[in-house]
Length: 160
Image (cartoon, rainbow, N blue to C red; front, top):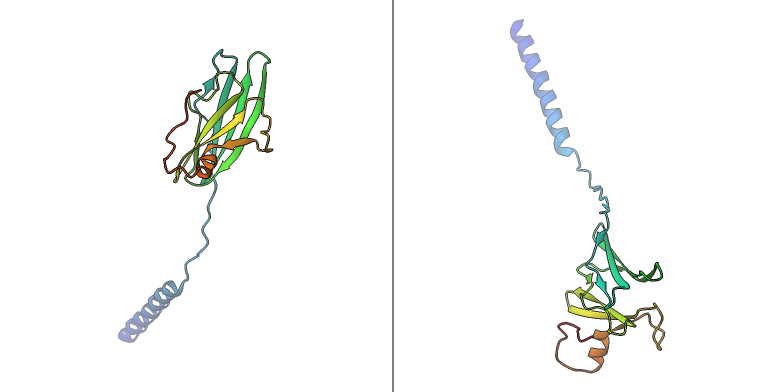
């Protein structure tokens, strides 16, 4: 009788193990992936001050997920005011920086530098935030350069 109980018990254990093993193999993986966008605190970019120190161009970058938002403001210490000059969400691989010589000598214009996989470009703004004659907020130096059909590459803008 003992041998029949042992054989029966072995059979039950084997069937249970087989059932558990086959259930594990047939279990489908959960394909849902949760991706959370993380926001990093704002990063202050290099600043550029005009020749008399009364105007300052300040930039800020906030990264959310794979995107970065850039904001550029002009602070006027004499009027104790600020002006949002430019705000954009950069494409992947794109960055914006403030060159040290961003201000024109007459303080009427300034520029920021855009870097991407194609190289550098420069956006020229009116310091008062006004529009250019063609209604644009900024002039894209690279576009004007392409229209000239010059084969040289602009490496940097300077000469204010």
